[in-house]
Image 1 (cartoon, rainbow, N blue to C red):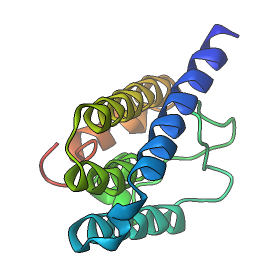
Image 2: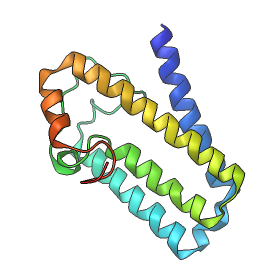
Image 3: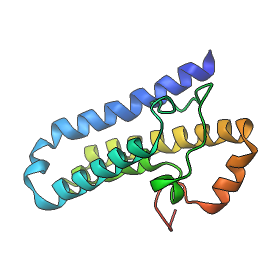
Image 4: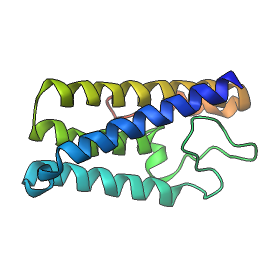
Amino acid sequence: MKQKIYSYILVASQYTAMIILIIINKSAFLQVVPLALFCIGFFIGIYAIYCNKPDNFNITPDIKKDSCLINHGIYRHIRHPMYFSVALMMLGMIIYNLNLLNMSLYTLLILSIFLKARKEEILWCQKSDEYEKYREKTKAFIPFIL
């Protein structure tokens, strides 16, 4: 039960940071660079969903019972393309208005994403020997870099 609560706290903090960043920076969508970053991140997220199986997808970092490892498409290069997509979309908000509140919210977002990814990877390692090999071949968030 504690693990489920932890998962929900991570999801809530991620979505809260995203929603507040969008609301307080809605004018960012009128600027070229923030809008471009948002759109690129959005399409990366759509592509990640396309490459995934519908019953695999989960907003919490918990692994669904009958899920399987996806290692094709964008998942061939990075293990967490959805998190990368969210971080990229919200980066535009920071670029638009670099201030303490935005930086704090973005830090909360990145921390939430990092902790969700860490929990997912621990669970995948427990579920599948194949996952460790997959981790060795791919980067976590940014293709070829991180």
